Amino acid sequence: MEVAPLANPPVCRIMDYGKFKFDAAQRARESRRKASNVGIKEMKYRPKIGPGDFDTKTRQVVKFLNEGHKVKVTVTFRGREVFHQELGRRILDRIAERVDGTARVESDARLDGRNMVMMLAPDKRARQASAARAANASTEPGEGTAETEAAAAAGSGQVGSGAPRAEPAAPAVSPGPAGSGRGDELAALRDGTGAEREGE
Image (cartoon, rainbow, N blue to C red; front, top):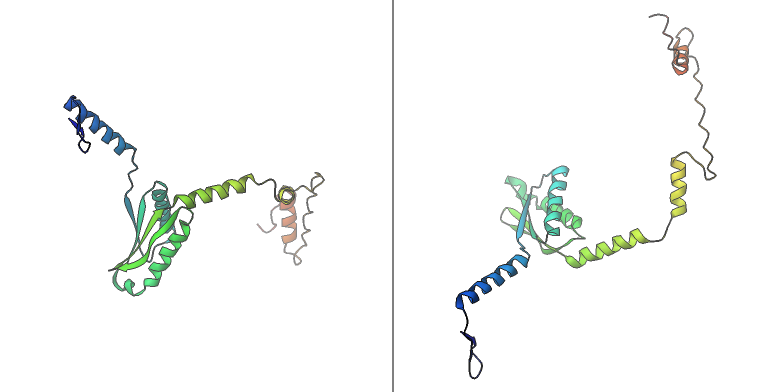
């Protein structure tokens, strides 16, 4: 088999051709397996989409981007909705804001017939930068720990000295108009005696 045809003189090697073809196929299969299979995913929205559906679809878009896929976001207009393109553009802008840390807008929103289309591509640099910011924020040494402890103590009913805070006294119930029995009934309920009204 000819190994280097452009050399002067050409270089040839005597070998088992079947084994050579088998090894070449194995190497090609291995390289295909290691290569990331990046495809284009599509997510369709409508101009009148509800907040729950919007959140679900946008989470799916973020998942696709984190897997390394490009995402084609489509807003489909029906009937007279095509005259209100600002609604579709607003939806696409909200999606772009949501995926700001993980993706970049590859092609801006444009109208394609009755669809408004935007392409998003994963952005590794932005993802690494946001991860680094999150790591720095979590390892910052005790900023505002005094305020945090004071807020926790106030929420648990403790003052800075560690003594429990006194419970406020229950407001006194004034009796209602004469003969109503309302004040007596409330006092009985508060005391736990459960006295019933006289007229019943």
